[in-house]
Image (cartoon, rainbow, N blue to C red; front, side, top):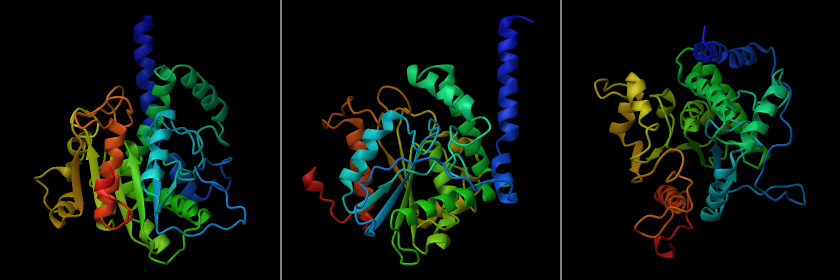
Length: 325
């Protein structure tokens, strides 16, 4: 067999193995085989309270990164200015970033895993060259976790695990349980589906309303839609990935009017927000802070403004003023 043939055979084998083992972590966690160990120091964009106490916020926003994330403390660098912009734009909200949405135990790929050494090596390669095959391997592994979340067989277990980790993060940051404080899950790319899946369980776990913001999210017709207060889906016209959800998942097709997605559309729970000529990756993406629109705003500034506007209309960003922009 030629080298090219071996390459394609190896790629197909990798795809098959990755797909086959994707649900095993969530199934093992549910069976109680593992999950007691915690991740190393989580990334926080917060200043620790010197008194050891954190005052509750009026609104919490949990950021769920895209498929390029490798651990709670290793969010892709292009997303960090966007996260900082969220906290600046939403002064009445607390923005949390320490949930790794591609693990039911919040354990990053470089954490206490059997394969941790391999993933650390892959991460080093990616840091040297973001376009290397290493980045593809991380994305591939996480894509299958997104597929697990959307799967009607394994999704309920996976989404329960993530919802519990979101609850744990909220409690760590002073969230008052059973107090009705609103929480918004902001899922970027694959994080959109996982946010939607976790939304089925989260209201009952925290005793408060849950909203979902999807930024270029690839989502199914997840039953989590039945328990969200509102889903805002922001997408770019040049983004080839965001429309995949409506093509891959039959429940989003118009010919199934009783699906969770189409019912939510009729009920007005879903708000679709087209952003214009935005791409998913590369120049002109959602986090691009150099490419400008005719209005003079950069792509990132425009996305932040749309998010702030959506939350303000729902009463979740009381300090918003359109004239101040």
